[in-house]
Structure formats: structure tokens, C-alpha cells
Length: 139
Length: 480
Image (tube, rainbow over the protein chains, first blue to last red):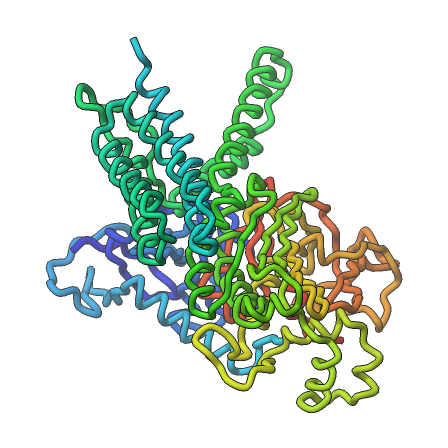
């Protein structure tokens, strides 16, 4: 299994490279009002709109937006897409593990392996919580 | 040498018209079985298709036409009125004939050219998105004195832009569907509903050549199905009642389409019993909080629009087709979500007319683009009454506060604020914003699953320079 490794607030995370569409650099991200904290915004690329998730905030590593992050990982799977804003991209690593575990060790550091669907669901749960906590707006 | 491909195309186009006429004639014959001329005309249509098929040696089409002609001849010879089963059999044959002609049945000697292919509309959307991005990318050419001074390069860039825009325009046309094709979706349904309710219905289409974006028409399928059900179950009277009223025993439903600038106007009318507004007022006074006096003050048009409120129904029992009290509200909700509107006119014993106004395309709209704090937002033009620059007032709605934006008068406009006057559910309100970018045409994409819950945005607008603006859903702003 080949993983794309990246960091977010000192945690190393990995995602299977088969889901990675492209890595963008210096792409403008447009913020969305009243969105849940992990949502950094949206971007437009090759005719598609990608929601950009701040991986530091989603991973529960505080509420400060990742700064200095210039690269964005575009993911595509089934009929969904998503993009991740990491702190830094480390590179690719091969892991011999079937089925993929929840975490592996890479250069003596634990790596949390994430599936795109898991990130999507986690963000969805956060959105639901934020909206039901009173930020929902209805006429 | 005969250009088979060319004649094949002509054959398909003409056969489609003949088959449509044939189906309409059969449906009329079913309602008027004593009218022999309808069967004669029907025979003529199939005979014409057979003649063209012979020229192209399309054996299977010829055989099917022959079989249909024989069925029609038998009916004419026996001088018996066609039964519903016979009509159904001929309609089924027409469906098979349509499928065979559509397949482009090959002549014995050679394989015909492929004329048409089916394309997923999602794929067309993808191509449209890419075309749009190419146009946007072109705007990002880094400025360079050398090419600005080069006449040949400037001319090349000018031609390139024209080609790109032409490509984009042609791609947008791929998404268009005619109102005739849209109406064809309902012919059989109307016939089946009419049989179920014991009605006789003529369905007419005017302005069938008018085209609209398939994404708009696709969203209209369910609302129109509901309107047809209502017209047949509640509007058009049974034939005997209609005769007693001095009307033609066959009721009429007419779908008319018009274009006006960026709008599509659809009218669906019937000549049924209409909606009795006096009875409606009485019903509302018993079931709604308004008093009899308040209801008397309202115009008929206001009273009629109240049938679109949730839960409204006056029928004492529901059927599979109508009377559940959810339909008209859903119709209005769908239309409003498309940026459209609905008005109802009705007169007792004369009929009812639903007028629907819609944007021609959901993909491209015009909107006012503005900024509030770090956010770029847009409001579709139909909702905007005007834009002004005024001193801030408590009567205006501070959009920055609502959105949690650190906004306020910009350094370049310290003495006032930009106010966008919008219409929210019939009432005017002023929104204070930081800066107005302009009035522009934008490409619209859906909000997406993850952000639908925020409930404040109806879409994402892609601006000409590639920026993204959230499309504000004015109706969902909290009321002042």
C-alpha cells in the first residue's frame, strides 16, 4: 500500500495514493461564511469545486488555522471529491499491510492512516454538531 | 451514388414527425371512435414511413409498418370502432417502430454511419467546467510588454478568445431541450390518468420549439406531474357533466412556452371547473387563522396562492393521484429553488391557469457580486431592487454581523456603506455590505452535500476571473 504522508500540527497522517488526484501549490482558497471550523474554504480546479479541510483543526489539534501551508491535496473517490490542507507534505511511503491498519510506524513516528470517506464523515459529523448547536439559520 | 447517411438522417427526422402525428391521431381515435378519417390519416402516416424505409431497404422497419397497416385496414374494413386494446396494440407498435428507426437499421449491403450517441449530462457538465476553466486561465496570462507590443500576438490572442467563447457557447447548447421534447414525457401519463378518472382530455403544446436548460426542465418533471394530476382529478369535469354545462365533452389542457430575455414563461391551463374562490375563502376561514373579514380584503389572486401553503387540501379523501395536501406547496418550493415563481388564475367553470416564470438556465445567471469582510458573496439579479451608498441605518441589515465577519466601512468609503436592496418574500430589505464588485454573469454550481446544512446559500458562483462567490439565498435570511 502506497501512502502519501503529510503533517498537521505535529501529527503525521497518511492517505492511500490511489485517492490522490493532484497536489496543488499556491491555489487560492475562498472562505465560506458560517462554515464549521475545519472548513478552510473552497477552491476551483479543472471545472470542479473542492471543499478544503484544515487537517489540523479536523484532527482536533486546536482551532488555529494552519498557516504557511501552500500545498493542497486533492482527493477523488467514487463520485465524491475533497481537498486537504496539511501543514507540510512529507512524501510517499510504502507500507506492507493488508488490510490497511488504522496506524503504522514510519521512521519511528506513528502515522495515522485516513480514508477519504472517514474524513468526509468526520467533517459531516462536525458540521451537524455545529449547525445543531445554534448556528443553523432559517428564516 | 446515393448518399445513404444523408437520406438516413432525413428519414429519421421525418419519421419522428410522422410517428408523433400517428400517436396523436390514435389518441384522438380512441376518444372519437366513430371518426373514420382518423384511422385513414393514421394509415397514411405509417404508409409514408414505409415508403421511405423501402428507399433505404430497411427490411425490419418495412415489415413492422406492413403489420401496422394491416391492423388499420382490418379496422377500416370491418367498420368497427377501435377498442382500447386495439389502440394500445398500435401504440405499442409505434414504440417499437420508433426504437427501430432510432437504431438506424442498416441496409443489407452496408453499415450505416453512426449519427448519434448518448452522452451522460454529468459528462457534459464536466466538459463545460473544463471549457470555463480554459477561459479563466486565459485571463491569467502574465503581463509582458513584448507581447502587448506584438500586433501578430495580440491578433492571435484575440482570435483565441473568440474561439474559446464560441466553444463555450456551443457547449452550453448541448444542455438545451425543447419544450416539445419535455411535453412528450407527459402524453402517455395524461392518457393513463384520464382513463383512470374517466375523463377525456386533449393535450396541446404551443411554443414547442422553445428551448431551455435540461437541468431546469429535469427539476420540473415532478411539479408538472402534480399539476397534470390536479387538472385531471380536480379540474376537468367528466364528459357528461361537461355536456350539461354546454362544454365540449373533451377537456383541454394546454402547455404554452414563451421566452423573454433570460426568462422562460410556461403556462399550463385547463378548461375545467376552475377554482371557486368564494368557496375557498369559506374553507380558509374555517381552517386557517385568518378571519372572514381579513380574507374578504384579500384579492382573488392572493386567495388562490394560498393553495400553495403546506398541508392545504379541500378534498375529503385522498387518492393515489391527488388530494394529499402536499403537492402545491412542493410545486412552489421547487419553483422558488430554481429562482422562479408561480401565479394562479382561475374562474369558476371557465378553467385554471398556472403561470410559471423560470430562468432559462441554471448554469449561467446574472448576479450582484459584493464583499463582506473576507467573503465574496453574490445575490441573483431577480432578487435585487437596487444598490445605494448611504449612511448606515438601523433599518438596514448588517450582513457582516450575521456572517461573523469583521467588516465595516472600508478605508476608501468612510462616510457610508453600500446597501443592496433585496426582496425577501415580497418585502424589501436593505443589506449593508462592504464593497460592490459589480453586476456580472456567473457560472453556478451546487453547494455540495457537506455545506447544504448551513441553509443560507443556494449555490456557488464562479466569476469570470476564477474567484468563487457564495450565492446568498435571500429567502433564508433571518427576518428583520
